[in-house]
Length: 233
Image (spheres, rainbow, N blue to C red):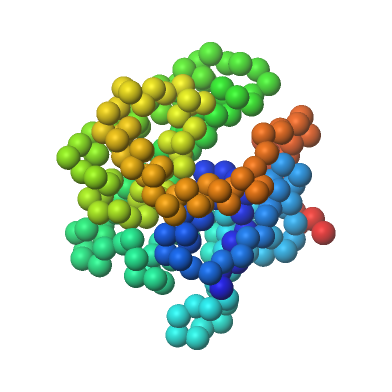
């Protein structure tokens, strides 16, 4: 049994996609990041960076003790190695998948996240910041579009790289991007959207999904300092 500590963000969707693809048994423990549940002491025990997602694997291989993992990329890698699915075993092919997994973790996710912040949530609309991150998101879409030329999936065969990247492309309109400008990316995006496990993962999200972001929520989400991560009871 996998315990998934989850909210409806792109990083949360990555893990539900894998769990549905691999048909693993899992139970969701919602962590409402709008209300500060990510700062509760019990959550910080498994996710010291006070971010979702995190998991506890209650049945690791070889009968080991339960193990907790935080950071979405690390979770995908762990689950791929545990199940021996969606990650090639040959060194060259495995490395290609990991390159694109880390590309998403270090590039697409953070840049698109800043795009969302300055375009959607920042109390002051700063043209330089908006242009900076919209343009960088555009560049990264171009990188992915080029990689997908003559490839069905990002690293060749379907992998955790695709699961990592797809949820960050879903809000392309909010990111002020036009998929028609990236035909290879658009074809891949439509293929991903049609996968039954992806459909199920987003159906799961509907149970928790909300668009309400209040001023209090913004202070919780965007006003964090070292003081913020002192555990709450």
